[in-house]
Length: 121
Image (cartoon, rainbow, N blue to C red; front, side, top):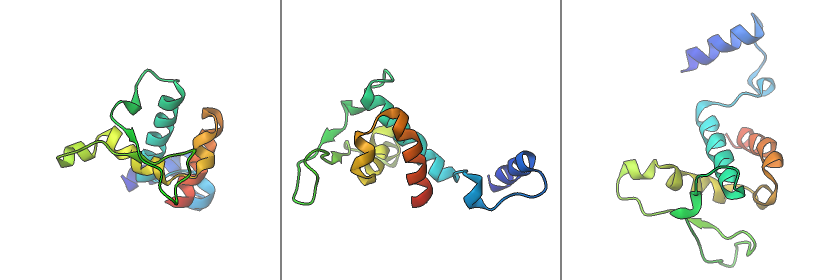
């Protein structure tokens, strides 16, 4: 995968590829997290037809939690395949993002999410 990405960078930038911080590209795991978070935000805002909250439940608010943004609970998964399902996978990432990102609109969320994913990966 790295060879394909390097080849694409040489195709885009030519012989002198800038350092990774200036490329504004995400690694493959970071890109997958970014895709999951943006799709989940679009589902919550009603932009897509998919009901992401059909299997995800809201958790109880504990002392350290923000009452405006309760943590989400993952749906039950019995197998490793069940742990790779979108509904199970996205809950951890959504609980980890800052509350400011949870309340903004989809248009504001996309650049904020990209900055967050770049800084965390």
